[in-house]
Structure formats: C-alpha cells, structure tokens
Length: 227
Length: 227
DNA sequence: TTTTAACAGATTGTCGACAATTCTGGTCTT
DNA sequence: AAGACCAGAATTGTCGACAATCTGTTAAAA
Image 1 (cartoon, rainbow over the protein chains, first blue to last red):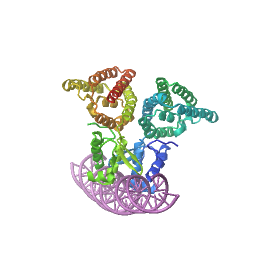
Image 2 (cartoon, rainbow over the protein chains, first blue to last red; image 1 turned 60 degrees about the vertical axis):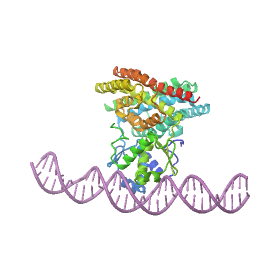
Image 3 (cartoon, rainbow over the protein chains, first blue to last red; image 1 turned 90 degrees about the vertical axis):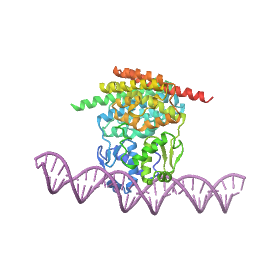
C-alpha cells in the first residue's frame, strides 16, 4: 500500500499485527468510539500477552485513536463534531503548506504520476458516479500524494502517520462520501495545475480553500440535520 | 509548568519520571543526538526494568525525540540542518493557523494575560539585553500561549505535546539565542495587537512571517558559518 | 582474494507473575 | 435518606526470564 510511513513499516512483529487489526476495527467502528478498552479482555481476544497488547495500544495512541490515563486505562477517542472540525483546521494548515512545498519540490515524474492518478479518478467517477471518490487509501489518495510530494519528512510523518487514520475514522463514522465528489475532483485538477506551474503560493491557497470548503460543507450539513 | 498537555500529566508513574529525565537529557544533549539507545544499559543506569524503560521510550518516540526500528532498536533523532528547516515550515503552518484561531477564540482575560507576559519579557530583556529571549518554557513562552489560545485541542496536542520538545532540542543544540531577540519582541507585539483587534487573517500572516523570518535568519547564519 | 556460510554474542520482542492503584458495593454514621 | 468510609475485586504498572532476531567475526569454498 504505502511505504516510507513510520506507522506502516510492514508489520513484522506480532504487536504490529495487533496494532493493524485494532486500527481497522476502530476506524471502521467495530470497536466503538468512546468505549473503554480492557487490556485483559483484548489480550485474551487476540491470543497475546498483555505486554504485546500494550505495545499495540501505545501505537494506537500515537495515531490519536485512543487516549490513556495513568492508572486508569485507555478509551477509544470520541468522534465529536467539534473534533471533526478541529481536524479540518489542522489539515487546512498542514496540507496547505505541503501543497506549497510540493509545487517546488516535486519532480516532473512525480507530477506525471499524480496527473495519472487524477485521470484515473476521473474515469472511475464516471462509472460509480459520485460515490466515494474520497474513499481511496494510501498511494491512491490525491491528498496523500501531494503530502508526500512536499518531501518534508516531518510533515509526512505527521499527516500520513499520525493523523491519517484519525481522519479516516471520522470519514467512516460520519459517513462521508457526499455530493462534493465531483466538485472536489475539479478542485483537485486546479491544484495539480498550480503545482505543475510551480506556483507554490497559488497551490497552497487552492488547497486551503479546498479543505475549508469541505469543512464548511460539513458544518452546513450538520446544521441541517439538527433541525 | 503547564497543564492540559497530554505528554505532561504530572509524572505519577515511574515510567513518567524516566521519560521526563530522558527527555531533558536528550533535549540538552547529555544523551547525544544520533546515538544508539541500549535498553539493557539504560535500564541499569536508571535502576528500572526493561519494560518500564520501554514504556518511557514509547513516549519519547511520540515526541519525535527518538526513532525505533523493529528488531533493531532505538536511536536519538539526529539534529540536521535539513530537519531544523523542516520543523520551521511545519511551525509556520501550524502556529499561523493557531494564531488565526486565537484572534477569534481567546477571551479578553487571556489576551490580557498574554499582554502581561509580553510586557514582562520587555523588562527582562532590558536587563539581560539580547540574551535568550526565546528560551522561556511552557506557560511563559509567548508562542505557547498563542497556541493554547487557539482553543483547538488537536492543534495544542500536536504543537505543545508532540513537537515542543523537539523544537527545544534544536534550540539547545544549535545554540539559538541570537541577535533576533529584540526584533522578535517587536514582532510579538504586532501579533498581539492583531489578536486584540480580533483580526485573524492579519494575525496569521504576521505569525507566519515571524516564523519564516526566523527560518531565513538561520539559513543565512548557517551559510555564513560554512565559509 | 573475494564471496558466502555459519557461528557466537548481544539485543529486541514476548510471556506470565507480582505489586500498586483504582473502582465497586456495602455498611455505618449523621 | 445522604454521605463518608472501608473491605474485596478488578485493572493497570512493573518485574525478571525466555524466545526470536539481528550483528559482527571467523572460517570455508569458489
């Protein structure tokens, strides 16, 4: 799927495997958001010792998927509207910067690949028409590629390693595919164009608007639901 | 020092204490940047079991102070010029956003406190004149307060919990007090003014310029040293 | 001489048991 | 009836030992 990602160095140890399993279960909601985590219970469930399980929990904490309190225990992070909007603001700042850097740092080959991915999305979209354009994962995700294109390892670690799965969790649990799919596609095209033109300033601005638009869209949607 | 900071919940457990100790030793360079970490050796040094030490290592990894590879071990993160400049770009994006949010979210009381801190820095500076304005820690740090003022818990966690000590490490090891002290003070004053005026857009722009200026200053300085 | 194989030593990952702390419920006092 | 207090149970933190993996060196083969 994706390499050069700290939280994903091909699961070699058993703790890695437990971590991945639990990550999916949390992201997809099989382990409920906000629920308490019992170490003995889960250790039995996955047939490993508590030490190994705790190692996995430590990594989940690094991904912001669970929270721990000393001498009390762990809870799965709660999916609140407030939290969702907060994440979008962080993304706006970070991915905006990534996009600016990508414009100057990406190689021609990388830009070519990105163009290909976007074209591929275009045809896929015609087939599924408006369904889950955003649901790609890893190297297939437009945003993911732009971030990697920044060539800023620190940025990549934070966005692809520490926040990526939390973002996916929100997407899954709030059920976000949305009518913004075709609109997002156009915005992605504009961003790619700015990158290809090596216009970092514009690229950042477009990416920020793109993410801010998603955020506002969600705000509106949730307001409507509240009625 | 500071509360509501995930990596600093008043060290209750022994792993917490080892974590804090090692954190300081790494930040201040007593444990050398880039050196390998031997679990048995350190466990003996601090008189704890390896499990406890590993718990501490996990937290150090969360702060980006060490890096681990499966079946190989941990190394203290290396302080490279590239890494330093990368961090500054991340800060520019994140603290810029924090500043924008602070302008709309901070209470009048918080703004008043911040003004007080800044005034205090002003008098201190006249005494020490140009020495280590930037060296404050925790609640006394201007940047720290602005970040907290964003009231965005996610942002606060990332900047104050996960990156703060890495930034301090660079400051310590590259020996940064610098002739930018008085200049920085003026820029801080301008930022505070924008926040007090509730002008988020301006506040963000000023903060970004402030951090970018620091970055460029460092770039220039290092170029000069290279001659 | 160079490359590969195997071995010894050390290091990391995993396990099960014990200690310390928190949570639960029941009793007693006001 | 409400609240404080005190066991007992359960959970988390810590420990030492064993298993799996890596590293560096030596020896054998091409």
